[in-house]
Image (tube, rainbow, N blue to C red):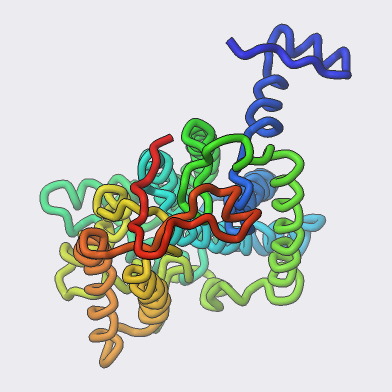
Length: 420
């Protein structure tokens, strides 16, 4: 049983003796030890939590003024923008907050890929993170439908129709999602209910994510486990100050979109009321779905495209077992490092191709980029881990930080990863 902490406030002490929530928070966020070389790339997890809370709070207030009916949804959003006090601010924060959420989560994930944060003993931590990504995608897609503009309606029609590609169960799934035989009022009601509930599910999974992190401990840029108290520092005040500074910079970036260009990351067609009789010239999802949309269109077969799209996320689940390298950090992997940057460029190319019409040279580029995406994870990652000769690892975090080195003698091979 966790020893009770003594607090200066007698009311806090009285509560804590009966429900030790303050002791738990003190242990988890004040005494929690972090590697002393954790840099600003480790702040994006905290930024994601801040954005999630912001999305939940603004979403609750927006739901108070939104009407989930096909004949009134578009007008209710316009009323929020024009008549509700600070409704424009709430909606712009919420609308751009979705993009900010994906920005920080994508950076968080690519940081994990670079520093090997998915490797033992953090496999489950990584897998929970992929579940969070899937829940985010579902929540964002359903939220994009709610304004009931042209892109909302046709995006919902196209994406939900993808499930019809599955034999036997596809059509019943589509009918259940629609609540009928076309995208209509039952669809909007279902999406609104799910969009409201799923952020709280995400919050619960995030709590599991943090709990798993505090069991295994945080990874660090060197990818080696702390060997003693000299390799770590308390989360508070060292990391809280660092995260606070990162949050300040991030909020400036966030505010720049909200106040100066709030519609930059959206689509202008969504300011046109939904019309089932008029199909937009080019149906595209939000920018954070574009790489997966490009993978979906990479093959002419509908079922094959759907399987590839879901496979692009499924491969992340098994990544801890695909990577055969004994070294975590890409800093010490000279052969793998250029392929990591090629993967980053490949994802950017997929995002661009997803925003273009599926014709001409865009089809070929999308197919090549899709092929490399799966080649990287399924072929290159296991192969390079077996043939690569990593650079020597530092002897400890403290030696690397304080003495700028501490590596093994030249020509020595890197040690295998220590288990926590």
